[in-house]
Amino acid sequence: DTEVTQTPKHLVMGMTNKKSLKCEQHMGHRAMYWYKQKAKKPPELMFVYSYEKLSINESVPSRFSPECPNSSLLNLHLHALQPEDSALYLCASSQDPWPNYGYTFGSGTRLTVV
Amino acid sequence: GNSVTQMEGPVTLSEEAFLTINCTYTATGYPSLFWYVQYPGEGLQLLLKATKADDKGSNKGFEATYRKETTSFHLEKGSVQVSDSAVYFCALSVQAGTALIFGKGTTLSVSS
Image (cartoon, rainbow over all chains, first blue to last red; front, side):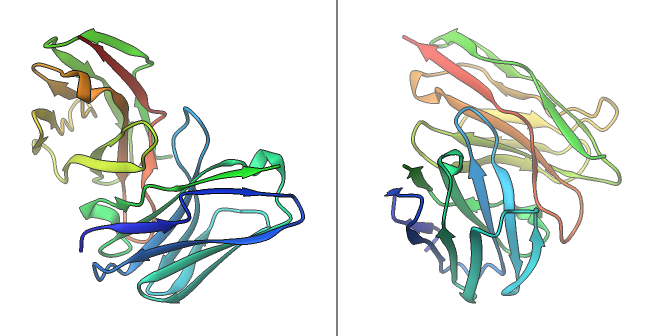
């Protein structure tokens, strides 16, 4: 298995909703990442988990809450989002916390906040 | 600081034309360099990489050579196809514990 699987592919949520994005990989990678990508822009790093511990939080608002239940799973819990949070959310993994081998990206969750 | 600069797009080419997308970098130490491709509606895919000076990465007809003297990693393809239409991101990694640093991306549009 050489994939990173993200669910759901599309999500529409209201500003008062609580939802979660899920990411799964079975490649034995020990680093996992959440990125946010706006249209026609590069991905912006949100969080890095290294060996299941949060190692980087790029000053992301607390309405985004990451969780790494085990080495294969990464969640992003969403609460009280704003319309400007609408974007493509990408999960990625790498063999180790130094991405020398490159990242494997999922196909993303396209989030719309209404 | 560490950064990646890519040529501005969009790049518009006819099928079978030669492609060059310029990428230069600024980095401390000895970075690894990457090209990622993003097709419409999809996530990013690693296209090729080079981890030390003078290394050439290649994949699917695309090539890029790590030039330390010019701090560049330009992407080339001899004959593009319509299916190559996508956004191309140059990226670098500097050290353990840090994440990839991306350029702004270059949109390639190939017409038949």
